[in-house]
Amino acid sequence: MNPNFKAVLLTILTLSVFTLVIIELTGISSNSLNALWHKKSAENNNKTGQPGNVINTVIDSRSQQVNAMPKTTMKFDETNFDFGTIPDSKEVKHVFKFRNTGKNPLMIAKADVSCGCTVPSFSKEPIAPGAEGEITVTFNPKGKSGKQHKNVIIHSNGELEAVSIGFDAEVK
View 1 (cartoon, rainbow, N blue to C red):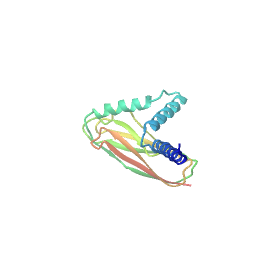
View 2 (view 1 turned 90 degrees about the vertical axis):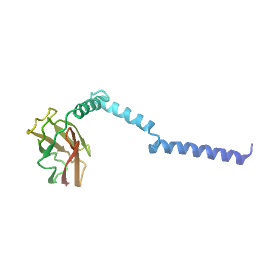
View 3 (view 1 turned 30 degrees about the vertical axis):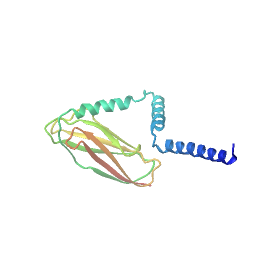
View 4 (view 1 turned 60 degrees about the horizontal axis):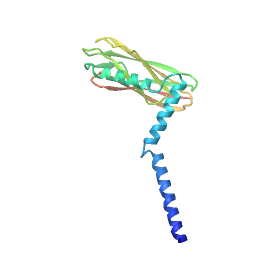
């Protein structure tokens, strides 16, 4: 066999393997990355004593329940809060108050956050027309510095199905 032919075949083989590795790592073929993510997610959930995907199942079930409810309206007293300057060692909380301004019960399906350092909590019970509700947002600035702006997206059976609330902080 010709030595140049062997070199060409070896080069083609090497480039093919390199191309496949790049495709897998960039997510163009997401099967391997999705499998890795789900495996890690299940492992992390099992470390905390929670079976894999239970939380997602509960959220999906609640979202379906909320989506089936009649639409209503809600109004927040404020949609952004400024904590000012805070140390990176001090966890801070703020309560966002809102009112169900519609004619049907209001129910929050879930709250999505822009960062794991932000934890929202809210009542799982429906809020009657005219009644008030609260969403408490806790921010842990550990490992953060400088100006911070974080958002929480509230999903409900409101006419606006997703509403953004947020806060600012200067972490020193």
